[in-house]
Image (cartoon, rainbow, N blue to C red; front, top):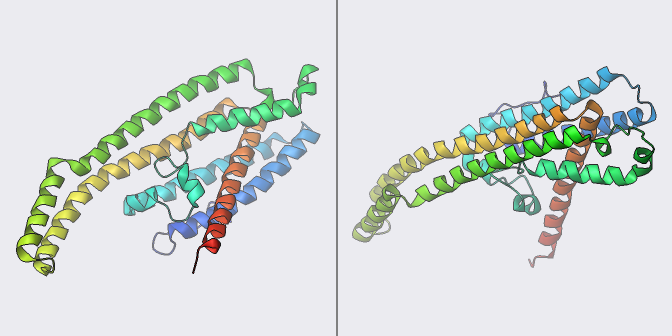
Length: 271
């Protein structure tokens, strides 16, 4: 399924369905990336147009994901922060509804180190490997600068989220909670009129806060996508292929292991 043909209609497709379809597409791209990396390893003269086109399509796949997610954030930001379509393992490592942008640098350095160990003899003899073992001094310095800037932006967004969370106890919410409690004591728990009025006021109060939440989650997603693009901008085309392979493998396998773990835990629960 291509990015251009994948459905993103909010009325005909839930985000869970979109996400599952997107994983299938990511897995298809992973196969293409691995095939291209192997072909390039066997013959470094592999057509650069093929590499450029595949990188472009993979990046468009990520862009499409965040565009659709943005539309769903507008519809229900709270649901996007507590996704039910991922495993409890994945949920443990979430930062504002997704992966932490600075994690991309740990992924890059980890894969670079592993490939360096595997191709050390080639590098010693002055041969270029074309993968992440072959990072230049200039690339490492650029990556370090980008990592520092990304961490700074992460902290700024986290601080915005912390301030947003504190608004749940601001004077307007405390007053609303007090008025609702007083009304229930005076009119009784079953007063439909009281509950309806309080629910309307609560809806208005939470609605104003959810607008701020949408902005914060979108900022986090924008940083995630920007980080991917900027890392790809530092790497060579062949290195970008290897980076995309590592990113897809980690994402797909963590998702798979998490679902298996959750399934195993449920099977052990008493009936």
